[in-house]
Image (cartoon, rainbow, N blue to C red):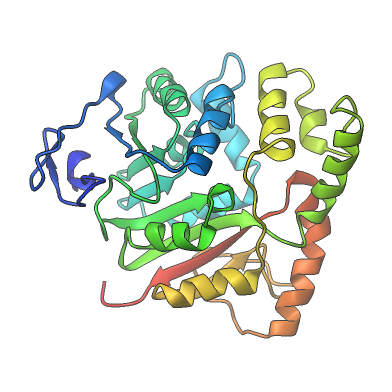
Length: 319
């Protein structure tokens, strides 16, 4: 298994690090609080997103949280269960855009090496503190996915969910993330769906008219009514974000083709009546009309919680 530092790279020239010094350009990096700072200066829009999440890291942790409670929350998510079941126990995994690290910590079991990367240091500090509470090894790095301080082709599985649609150019951001997957490895991408996001956009319009004093039909806000911090984090992330894009399955599959990623499946399934048993298995067939109709159905299935859908692919080439 590679060490944590062997998975890192200089964000300026992409070469390896030794004691956080680039072996090529000589740039020296620091790791305050045990979190390597491998972030280069960003454009104004990216910096606005970083400041947005620094004010209210997302998602927050409940009070008196525990590892058993984290696992129980994750177990309620079909996607999290399928992802955990599909990833081999000895895989090298990257969660790009890990936020406060809850999925990374959930997946950090067996002999997996799981790295969580994010643009926002306050989020990573919460993730590292949670890892210490849970008795887990927390491998977290502060970096920008457009110039990642991570080694190309080093990861068996790369997960980037809820991130690309908050970047100035999701298509370019996808290309950067895809380079981190090893040949034969798996890429898991989650973005807002153009159709499934419509219910939240309606709720957001009502909320804006009401000055955010009234937000109708949001089950997440209802469930978090006794957790003010987590409720505020959801409100900001879903209703007041400074950068948001929405995408179709066909658009994301186009990104896959452009970057040498073979399409495997969508979650929820883009096939009528299919229930995926293996998240990394190839869908049975393809039909554009069925895919389109499935996306329309996602307004009901995904709309209550924001409309995020997942697309899974594998990097073409020898493993």
